[in-house]
Length: 154
Image (spheres, rainbow, N blue to C red):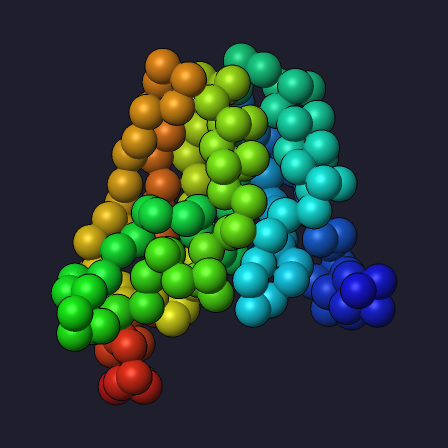
């Protein structure tokens, strides 16, 4: 795993997780491990909590590759039109732990970008849920060229 992290750092010039502030907004970049069932390590979860604690009154935008479990759905579960976040490969496996952290802050936005989920078609590409008495919005940016489950590219 350390070798993969070193390659990522070499290629992008950034560690696997980092944060910055821009115009009063806390921005946090996270990456999962453990494919085909991705999850955040305890170190990543601690990093997330630390970054949020350092800037407790700022809106937080979290950028990640994989969406959280049960956010993006399939247009038709019987026909399997789309990949979706009920499948282990396409969602963070410890999403409940992530949601517990987000439930303690007041303005979280979770932006993910997994190109295998059909853009503009699958339900809940933009999804808001209640966590800790406030809204958390998920924005799932997907490839506009992907046509869905077992379809390949246009």
